[in-house]
Amino acid sequence: MKCEKCKVREANTHIKKVVNGEYTELMLCSECAHALGYDNVFDFEMPDMFGGLLQSFFTGALPARSGASRCPECGSTYGDITNTGKVGCAHCYEAFFEELLPSIRRIHGNTLHCGKVPHDFVEKADKPAENEIDNLKTQLQAAIDEQNFELAAELRDKIKAKETEK
Image 1: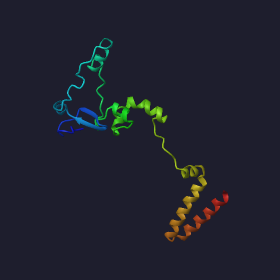
Image 2: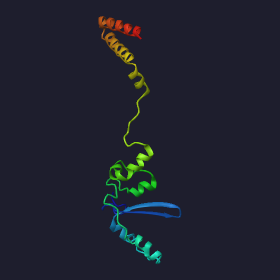
Image 3: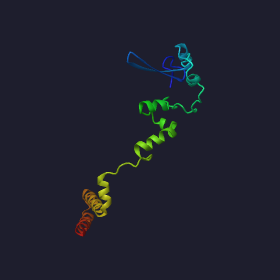
Image 4: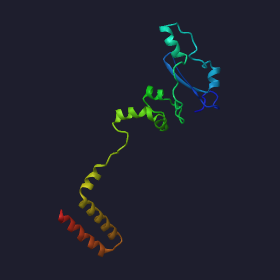
C-alpha cells in the first residue's frame, strides 16, 4: 500500500485518531510520519510505577511480533482484523492463517466449505428411474424436432414401459 501523503513510498505506519468524535486513519511511509511528528509515538516519560514494569512495556522491551505482521496486499494487521471483525482481503487468510484458524473453527465448526445441494438434485439422485424417463423425454423431443418419427415412436414406447414399471 502506498503512502497516503506522498503516494510514492510504501506505507509502513498506520495512524488512527479520534478528534471530537471523528475517527480518521492514515497510512504513511516512515519519512512522512517523521515529518508529521509520528516518529517516536512511545517516546514519553512514565512515572516509575511497579518498578518500571509499564515503562518497559511502552519502550519496546517486550519481544516484537514475527515478520508476517501485515498482509502483503492490503496492509491489514492481525490486530486490525480482531478489532473490526473483518478480514481486509482474500490474501489476509493466507497471511494470518495460523492466527485465524482457531477462530474460524470456533465460529463455523469446520474449515472446509462443503457447500449446499439443491433439493431437486437430492430427489432426482434418490429416484434414478425418473432421471431415465426425463432423459428419454428429452431425446423424444429432439427426435420430433428432427422429424425422425421412427425413433420418436421407439422412445415413446420406452417411456410408457418405464412409467408402467413404477
